[in-house]
Length: 321
Image (cartoon, rainbow, N blue to C red; front, side, top):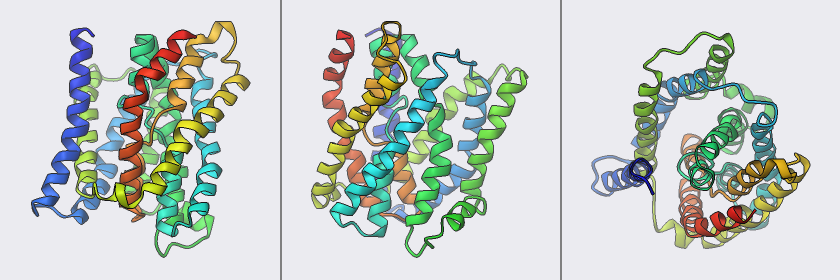
């Protein structure tokens, strides 16, 4: 591992573990409450996250025709995991808030730089980082639309009307502004107007900052005892993330032609990303819409620990291809 990679790994784990631990300790010490975490999340979602989204999309390179299918592949995998997660949640007999948290955890995976794209970089080098970033392109649009729709639909006391849930996205700043920022960023990218020269520097600082704020807020509601309470749900989510999702991912990879001799890198990326654990954003989703936060935290914590243990095996598999 070279010095730059070691620095990136240390910075990543410092932000993730440091943010969660800071939030957890602040709540345990009584300095901040779990309700404060919800307010922080909503503020960061409305005013910090849109800036990062716009800048990241603005500087994005236009992909070639072979790579353009990656965000489509990722979007289809998210959508396919919806009925899978829904069926499991119903079989477990989860209440409304728990069902929403379980479905969100099953659909959205940790495909970004905290797991999937980082593993792709380790396995494929800079090409893996580039492909992983492209793969993540559809995550935010789906999270801020389909994910928020599910969150509002399963929130306590929410109406069952799909139209009411979708219209609700446009009424609150923490849901409206991120959606608008996606269109603004894509518009700037397609316009050909060059991004400011300081954009890369701002992103280098802004991404860890926004992630750290979210993780501190999530840490305020993180309860380690929930793992013991929700062990059945955690086992089911492991089945979803590490068996069913990879199976669906390989099926989609075959349909997209990633098994052909010229697309080994795309096949390797598909394997890595389809075995990714639950995304931290699923905990954020539960927090924003008052779903079962403890269940979402337990699912995120246990699947990510398992993914770290399984990472060497995933690397061996992709390197054998």
